[in-house]
Structures are given as structure tokens and as C-alpha cells.
Amino acid sequence: IYKWYRSGLNRWHGPGSTPDFQDIIEDRCYNYTQRIRPDSRSRNCQEIKQAFMSAFISKDPCKATKEDYRRLIDLADPTVPCNKRVLWSKTKELAREYAKLRGLVTLEDTLLGFLADGLHWCGEPGSPDLNTWSCPDWEKDCRTNYRSVFWKVLSERFAESACGTVQVLLNGSLENAFDEMSIFGRVEAPNLKPMVTLQVWLVHDPGKPPRDSCSGSSITKLKSILSERNVRFICRDNLRTRLPILSNIRRLRKQPCGLF
Ligand code: AVW
Image (cartoon, rainbow, N blue to C red):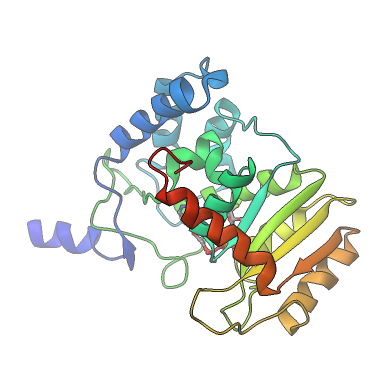
């Protein structure tokens, strides 16, 4: 029976739920609402945790819908400014550092983005527990898994409610810095409001030669998606625009009480 049980839970190709998922969500929620963003002190972390769990517990891990997360999103709607948003694709850590330095925000600075950052979660029909053995992988199992749908819903809301200048850090060390299949490509870029300005920063891994540029075909494709939507577009890819960011980060890291 144990073998059968285990093979059932082990059938997906993605990592299993993060151990202590519930406790992590609860700890992060108190940390965010009490310390990081005290203006969100009135949020009810117990209720938020319950809403998160009941979105996916006991459900088929491949049948996630937007609706499943509605209650959670209603309880924890983001309050970050609409004109200070930074998006990213394959540049998460750098984008977070860049945003922090400039007083801007990424999705992980919103309550729900902060709660789920880097975690995995899925349930199992008929079981009150999380599956810690395996969870569905976007490519190998199903796209409508609970983690992917969560980031999709959050990203869509984050992009469609953005205003003014939105920045995005794309990875110019890849062949296609703009990936149409990424969340930025599928969900965020096509949901920016008309009259928003998208400022693209093409960043390169130190030591690796740049492979894509503002005039390359992937960025040209992005430009055409945006112009159809009346979104203004600026792209910077020369190294001089990037180096000050990285050297600032290095400098600040060396300070004992620096920003990091
Ligand atoms: P990617 P995307 N923690 O690097 O353009 C863990 O190709 O697809 O970038 N996993 C996450 C997180 C997170 N904080 N955020 C997204 N994911 C998942 C949200 C998600 O399934 C931000 F606003 C995503 O496809 C960025 O502008 C994959 O990990 C944009 O979406 C990262 O793939 C980055 O998504």
C-alpha cells in the first residue's frame, strides 16, 4: 500500500511542495504586514493563510483556475504604487536589487508575491495534505497547475494596473531576450495599458558576451506587440547603462549597514 501511495504522489515532474509551506506563509505574512509594510497591518494573516490553502488543497493539481484564487486576491490586493513597477524575465535577482536601489517595486514586493516567492505547492484530490513528493511541471505535466496559475493571475493584475513608466529587465545574454512564452511575454506585456511607457533594460551576465540587443528580432517583436497597444517603448542595451547599477550594488554590499 505504501509503494502504491508513494508512486501516486510521485507522478509529477516538478519539485514537490516546499516543506512547512503553511508555516512559511504565516511567518512571511506577519513579517510583511507588521514589519516590512506596516501600512498593511490591518490584513488578517490567518484568513489569508486559510484562503491560500483552500485555493488548492484536496483539488486536482492540474485543474487550477483564476476563480480558485479569487478569495485570496480579494483579501490581499496589492497597494504598491502604480508608477514604480519593475518587471523581469530571467533576471529576477538583478531586478529585485535594481528596484530596491531605485525605490521601485517588483511583484515580490506585494504581499502575495512576497508570500509565495520561490515556493512550490500543490495538493491531491481527497487528501487534506500538500504533496511534498512532486507537483506538476508547466511543460511536462500541465500548464494549469496551481503555481503557474497563481503567478499568471498576479502578474496580469500587476501589469494591467501599472501606470506611468514601467521598467523591465531582460536578459541580453540569451538568444532571445524577449521570450514570447514567458509570463512577461504572454501575460505582462500584452496587458500594459495604452499610454504607459515601457523602459526595457537589456542586461548581460558579467563575463558573458551579449547575445541579443535592442535591434535584435526578439525585441523588435516586443516593440510591435506594444505599438499595437499604444504603449510607448524605450530600449537601452549598451553596457554603460548597466554598469553603474552593478557597481552600485557591489559598493553597497561592501558597506556593513548598506541597503542589502
Ligand atoms: P522567467 P517570466 N518566485 O524567468 O517572464 C518563484 O522566464 O516567466 O520569467 N517563481 C516565480 C516568481 C517568484 N517570485 N515569479 C514568477 N515565478 C514563476 C512575474 C513563474 O511561473 C514578475 F512580475 C514564471 O514563469 C515578472 O515580471 C517563472 O517562475 C514575470 O512574472 C519565471 O520565469 C517573470 O516571469
